Length: 164
Image (cartoon, rainbow, N blue to C red; front, top):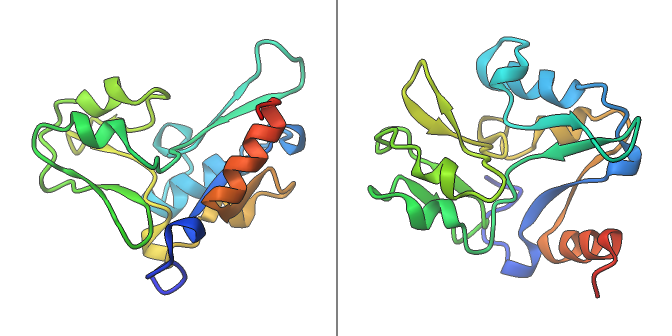
């Protein structure tokens, strides 16, 4: 956790999806699934890339935002979801998870997903086993995924959406 440990809240890192740069190559999906499960299976990836129904040849990236105040955490009846106060990252403790799927329903983008084989909810862990160096960001060939301080990512997202 060396890269993120002890950072003040304004320096918490998150990754952001930049639609104009995504070609839909799915490299992020493959790298994510392989990094976590050693298989190239889109269904195992913690990031989802889908065609934008409103713009031909554009894509939408759906991934955990590691929210400031995660509703998935609030919805968990057994406190299996933890927000690390040092890094701002949100994790699911699979040993505590009872598989109720409340977190999936509560999340506005349904980012935790149910792992049928393990019978628990799973989500992006910011590539914890790679010292918090998200593989999807590292291997995105177009730079459509960027790792930024939370406040910078928020400002970029607001500017992109025309929000003041």
